[in-house]
Image (cartoon, rainbow, N blue to C red):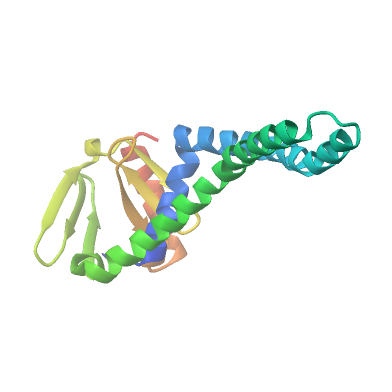
Length: 183
C-alpha cells in the first residue's frame, strides 16, 4: 500500500487520539465547568452598576464599594471567562503547526510504501526503511478516515483509509490486523 500523507490525515488522527486520551477528557469536563461559572460572573458584572447606583443613593460608601466591586468582578471575569478559550487556542496552534510542518519538511510529502504481512509491518521511504513485528503494536483504533496503530499510549502510526483500493481491501485489513495487535 502506498501512502502520501496530508495535513488532514494528521488532524484527523489527533482528533481520534484525543477522544481516547483521559487527560483530554478531564480538560473538556473542566472547560465545561468553567463555562458554567462564566454565566454567574456575567450576571455579577452586570449587577455591579445597579449596586453602585443603589449604594450611592443610600449613601453607603460608594467610592470604596465601586473600587472593590469593579476589581473583584474584573478578576473573576478574566479568570473564568478566559479558561474555556484556551482549548480553542491550543487546537488552532496545533492546526498551524501541522500546516507549517507539511510546508517545511520535505519528508512529510514523500510517498511511503507500507506492507502488512504475517510477521509484521514494514515501510520504505526514499532514505529510510523500517520493519516491525506485530508485538511492537499494542492496539489499533479506527476513525472515520484513518486507522491508528498504537506503539504505546502516546505514539501511533497513521494509516489513512483513502489509501485502500476498495472497501473489500479495507475490510480485509480490519480482519487481518485486529487479532494481531491485541485489540
